[in-house]
Length: 255
Length: 255
DNA sequence: ATATAAGGTGTAATTTCTACACTAAGTATG
DNA sequence: CATACTTAGTGTAGAAATTACACCTTATAT
Image (tube, rainbow over the protein chains, first blue to last red):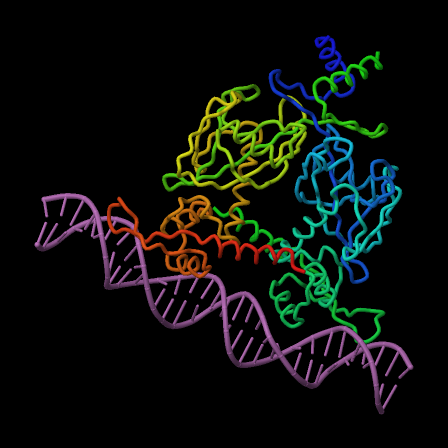
């Protein structure tokens, strides 16, 4: 009996998945289901938002959730993250970083599912259309982080971890531009910081510090179409930004 | 034929693993094998070391590797990390933090295996005996990070990531004590920093800074059994350390 | 022309960081 | 017991970064 089962198990593997594991006998091998969930931050209407989907599948059908799906056998997890985000929201070519892996036994009601969280901060101009490409999601929608709905699974915990992460990150790397349009004012930039850190910053000190980084390039232009006095527009200088970033990295690598 | 295979697959699941996944039909579910690898830092003979095992199983039999094994279905990954470290090295009750998840397709020669890296910094006094409890490992041994052997799988990359992580970490949190005995001298502490950061630090500035944190308690005692002038011993003040750490956390949580 | 709302600017006090070199104290040796 | 040796232990001045703080300017709307 047992032999028959083992035999069919192997046949199944060969048929369904060439890349399936053939692990040494003697090892207690358990296979698990593996997903990726994405926390995508955007800045819209002066607020920090994240991208949620409305699920179209059980469990948690009709709930809001982070965009997340299963990882396939023939794709690395970084690549999988990009595919998954695209399939559920229509957003492509988004570079995400790994956040944390959530592997509590009961985090998924239907069985053992381990998930890797990814996060990114993106620019919302060019108004990318949100439309799920598969039908695991009914729709995708930006929600302000200040008033998130209840989320499926442990997604609230994943979101909170990602918020902690970007708070830390903007404190030692000036990456807040990623949330703004190409051209932005210093006040807009300050608002991004304030909404991530959730506290007010001093205007003069903020400007002094940002300009001192030396990665902002003042454009000749002013804001257009705004009531009251228009502010100067800046963009960030990729060359100098790269240099600063390298310094940051070299601090980490330090030989 | 296919029906028979599916049937036996279910039978196998029921027999071998009660906790197996029962996931909704319609989803393209691929199961993967899941492991944890641990990077354990220690400080011995004035050097930063990590704990390696000599593998007793294919693939990479007889190679040096990070202690790592499969995660079981009924254990969360944090718990699994502790179990795995114990089984391969005999070290128990070690609190580890998650490092990163490595999920490249071909990182394991026998199939798709995703691994979660964990790391810890531990105190080597009380001379914990290293003896593998299972026979997946022949032995466990401390290796200086300055001259590591070639490691199995992508374990060298995992190690490098962990080194980056602790470098960052000691730069904003004074956690280097974890590597030292209960009572230590400031010079010993400085050596720990120097070997992690891999650069010389200024003695006076280092002492000033450490004492300013206010988490070191000067014991009345001096070093014993040392040639030449004995240095003052310190231990770290858990209460004040906890306070500082809370402040650190509250910076992260910030409401 | 006037009111309104945001843009934009400087300084002083404090704290933190960096660079730098000599004396003190205990052990080992002859 | 005198001397050599080795590590312990200490302070200061200049530079850089951080903080707190308030008013005038300028474009638009009425």
